[in-house]
Image 1 (spheres, rainbow, N blue to C red):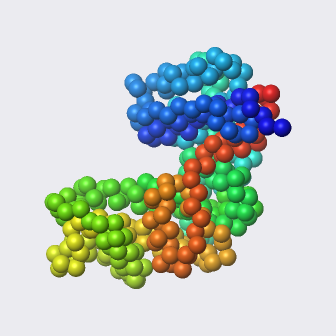
Image 2 (cartoon, rainbow, N blue to C red):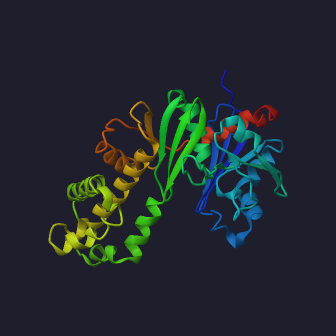
Image 3 (tube, rainbow, N blue to C red):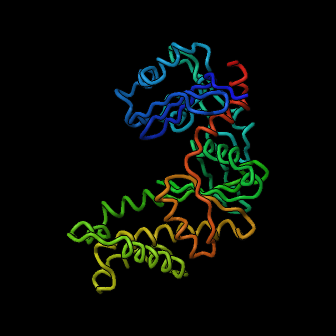
Length: 323
């Protein structure tokens, strides 16, 4: 029998946005709010007031309902810093790391991030994620076939490549591809040709330029990314690249380098199930790049935050307490 009564107030409170949902026992949405009140844009920096504005009506109707939030709200710059749990980590470990805070209208549980410590033997450096762990838990809950041996890629400002084994996040890498693209586009000589160009490239021309960037990243060899970046400008000057497609080419270089670096770091990935998680348009760009690296069949999964929050709440016993 389907449980359609409210069981959880769930929030994904990130850097730029605040998303909140009222969920039933099956994780279905009964109501939702979406505000541009990320931790960097919360009105007057008052998290409690923003929380009350979003959750208040639900709380009045459901005074005993548990509330759970993931994302940067639990970071050092958020409402309260929640300690990271160490990788390898599964849903139980993450649920055990919840920190409860007083919001003035209720008690809110904050989801911890995950830290991968440095490893002198492998040369791995410390790495962290906060918010992505909830997406990963959600993907594994919705797609059990990806919970055994898989590589889950989350493109974005700081892209994550997460290695999954037996329902655990065992390791991950971070690539600042999105942020680097934005900086180079807006604050370097590489973005100037596109900004000064009055033409608009066709989708076909842009995709072709993107493919050229990916191929050049793949063939960079010892030159690496720093030895390839200036080609965004030099190829325009040599009339090998249209100014209108120069940013697509830059995107291909950066994403191609990310894929090359990540696959080299992770070793043989041929036996792993591979999936992309996130914005559809960006994931399609990554899928296109991965095809150049002999990964032609990649599943694209959209936002899994709700599923992740519901799964963590169940492991923490929060939804059972709401019955």
